[in-house]
Length: 302
Image (tube, rainbow, N blue to C red; front, side, top):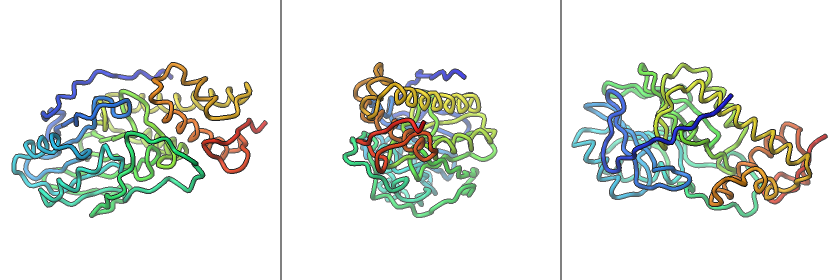
């Protein structure tokens, strides 16, 4: 199945863009190879509001959010996950509005790993965020004229959650599914087995549109999610082919299968390959010398 990315997007920095009835999008001016044109925040409601993913510490974005809120009460601040381009501004917005913060939980690694030295990513971890309200899968928070449900989607991060605007067909998919690019699945925050299971979870839903954490909407979500899964399986096959061709290190694999990728993303690509290898080792299709690690030696199981 083909996977067609949509990179058409006007960030409209500093301005609230109407997306649907009672939903506004504001984009932070923090573009990068990892964040595309910037991080999207969403303001939901008309009287008492909810804010989804307030974003990084950014004065101009905080001012834009306050102008959009326009003196109306904010009851809840939802945080999809604790990467520093999504969650840090929650603390200041909470202090200004008195809203309760909502998330799956504080930051944590997906599982203990022997990573060695991990390349730093732009979306590094926010270790200070602790939600006022920890939500479980399927839990619904009711506000003034809106109901937001929790759809746990670990993979990109262990505490990643999508949020559904109940009764509208809208899913705020954060970094799990984005129209412009695949999600980074990078240990220690993420796990490929979790990510693939979360994709399967979304295919069982009937959302009509995804509003992601970066870039524009995903307008045919079921087809797109199936494409993402096929893309990951194709990447998995490419890694296995490189191992059968004699590659034994993550560096060799990255240089071969990401040769046309922006070199600034090769560190993240190495982590993604590691996530695939860790999953393949766990499934018995790949063997490694000792515990899987970034500098480990890998080979086909047969």
